[in-house]
Image (cartoon, rainbow, N blue to C red; front, side, top):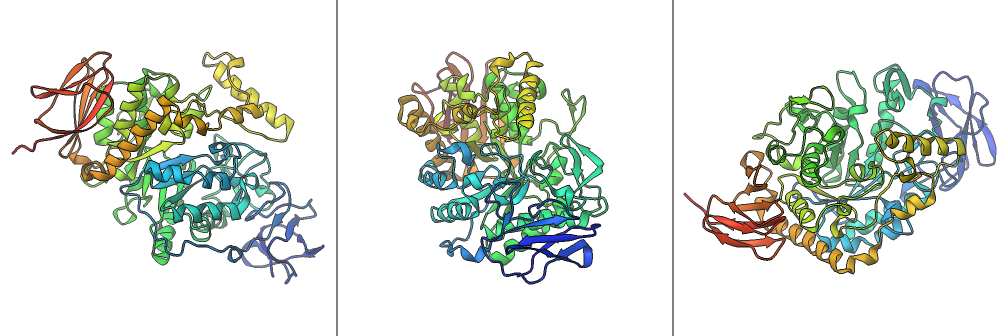
Length: 581
C-alpha cells in the first residue's frame, strides 16, 4: 500500500517502513507519497523529513509505543461491529453524562468503563460524553494535552477499545459523545511544525501560536481538523463531538471553520441515517453559535451554558470570586433559566467590558444549551478539585440537582455527581520529561498561591497519588447518604422523562417567580411548578394555582398552606397545579 504525508516546502521526505527506508515522491499540494509497500494493519512506520530522526504520522490512527514512537497502520475494516441496528439518539430530550475514562474506574481503561455502562442505563442518562481520547504524553492526564488527534490514547486501550466501548454503549441504548480539542496541542510529543505550517504566528493564544486556520497553508490544516472530526463519527461510530474552547479557534476567513465543519457533519448524518451532534464550549455568549447555517449562524447544534452553572453554583455556595462576581442572586438564576446568558450584552465585571448578546427566546430551543451543576472544569480547576458535595448540605445539593434536571436545557452530569461522590477530581498529569513535569507542578501551585492558597495544600499534578485520589469509589454508592442521593437523581431523571413539560424546549414559556429576601423561588414548567426554599428555616412558597399533586419532594413535611406550598428548610418540591382559565 502507499503511505502519504503533507510536508510542503521540504526537499526530501522518506518513510521508514517494512524493514527499510523508502524515498517518497512530491505531488500536488505539498503531499508526498511512498511507492507501493508490503505493509498492512499493525505494521509500524515513521517519516524522515530532510534527514530528521523518525517522526510519527501527523494523521496517525494508532500510537502503540507512545506519542514519540512510530505510528502503526490501522485498518478500520478489521473490527467487527454489532451495532448495525443503531439509529442514534437526538439531543432534544437527552440527559448527558460526562466521563473521564482514566478515573471512572481504578483500571482507567475503556474496557473497564464499558463494564459500568449498566449503571448509566439504570440512572436514566441517554448520552455518555467521554473526555478526550487523543494520545498524549504520559499515562495519566485529563486528555487536553493530546498531540495525535486521531489516535486513541494507548493506556486507555487504543482504537479497538474505543470501538468496543461504543459498540457496547449502543447495544445498551446509549449514544456516545467525544470531547475533541482543535484549539491547541499538548507541549510534549507535538511534532506537527516539523512537517508543515500547522501553526501560525499571525494569532496568539494562551498556548502560544494559534492553530493555522486562516494563514498560508491553512487549507490543509482545516482539512486535517474536519477529516479528524468526520473520522470519529464515521469510523468509530461516535454520535457527536464536544468541541473544546471554540472561542480560541482564531479564524478570520469569511466562512468560519465551525460553519464548514457543521456543514460536513450534517451531510454525513444524512448519509449515515442517524443524528450527529456538535456541541461547542464557547465563552462568547453569542447565540449565532447555535443558530442554523440557513439562518446565518454557524450551525453548531448546541453549546455549554456556563452562565447557568455560575448562577446556580454561586447561589448555592455563596462564592463570588473571579468570574463568579456578577452572579449569586436568585434573580440571576431566574434570568439564566429564562434567557440563558446573564451576560447578554450587559457589563461583565470580570472582563471589564460589555459581553455577549441576547438569545431569541421564541426562536431558540432550550435543548441547544447544556445546563449543569458540575463539570470537569468547574471541579478540576479548583485548587484541590473539590466537588460541591464537599461543602454543601444535602438539602442544597438536592435543590441544585432539581433545578438542573427540571430546567429547559439539556442536563449534563459529571461522573459521580449522582451519588455525591466523596472523591475529589483534581488536576493531574504524568509527563515523562522531568523538566516539563516540574514546570507543570510549580505552575499549578504558583497559580493558586497567588489567590491565597498555601502551595503545600495544592495537589502536585505529577504525583501519581493525585490521579489515584480522583478515581471514583464505586463501593460507596451503597452507603446510606450516597444511596439516597443516587435515588434522588434517578427519580428526577425519571420524572423528566415522564413529563413532557420538563423537556419542552420553548424558552419563552419558562417563567420564574421569586422572593430574594425570603430565599424562595418557583419555576413554571407548563402545569408543573418547581418550588424551592433556599432558607435555613421552613417557608411557605406562594403558588399561582392550587396544588393537584405533589410529584417529587426532597424532604418530608411538605404540605399546602392556603395558596402556597409549605416547604422545610433547604428543600424543593415538584408539583402539578390545577389548570386555571
